[in-house]
Amino acid sequence: MSNFGNRVYSKVNRPEKELVEQFSNLEVADISDCMNKMGCIDSSIRPFNDVNLLGTAVTVKVPGGNNLMFHAALSLAKEGDVIVVDGEGYTGRGICGENMIEIARQKGIRGFVVDGAIRDSKAAVNSKDFPVFAKMIQPNGAAKGNGPGEVNVPVSVGGTVIYPGDIIVGDEDGVVAVRPQYAETIAAETKELAEKQAKNLELIKAGKSDRSWVTKALENAGYKILDQTWDEN
Image (cartoon, rainbow, N blue to C red; front, side, top):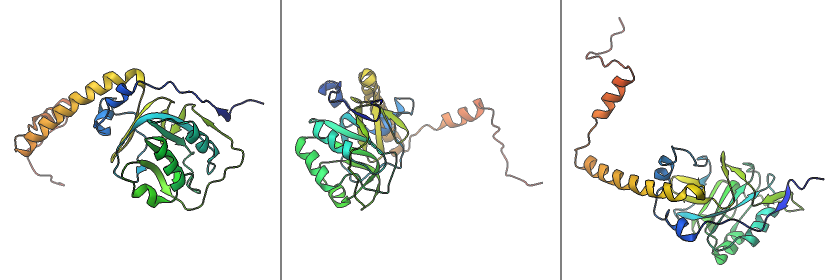
C-alpha cells in the first residue's frame, strides 16, 4: 500500500529568522501587490482577532473533521512556526480549540491558519498575542481515530498552494504566503511600495491627488468621454 495520506515529515527547510522578520510590519495587501496581486488565501478564511501573523509554515493535511495530524504537527512545530491546516474547507466539526491554542502559545508557535472550522472561539477572539485564521465556528468536536492525514507536505489552503517553510504573513485583510527564495526581493519591493503609498496618501489628505491617470487610462483603452448627458432617444 502507498504511504500517500499517511506521512509525517518531521523536518522543515525553514528560512533564516532574519529573512522572516523582514516582513514584520508589512501589510498583506502591499505584499500581494508586489506578488502581482497573487498569493493570498481566500477571504472566507478570516481573522478571529486583531493580532498580526508572521512565521514559517508547518503544513497539515487532514480529512474533513479529523485532527489527529493537527495534533502531530502541534507536537513537531517549533518556536516561530505557523501551523497551516488544509482541512478541505469542512466546517461540520471544529478541529482545534482552546487547549490546542494554549499548547501552541506555550511553545512559541506564532498562530494557526485553518481551512475549516474552530471551536472555543472565545479563546481565539480574546487573544492578545496569538492570531487565529479560520472559516467558521463549529462547537462539534473533531474526530481523531487513526487519521489519515499528512504533515509537512504541500497543501491547498483557501485556493493557494502552501509549502512547508513558506513565510506566512497575516493581518486584518487576510493571509499571504511567500516562497523563501523570492522573499528578500518581495520584502524590499513591499517596503518601497509602502513608502510610496504613504506619500501618496499625504497628497490625498492635502487635496493634491493627481487623478489625470484615470482619463489617460480610459483614452488608451478606447473609451469615449462624451461631454453630454445620457439620452435614451
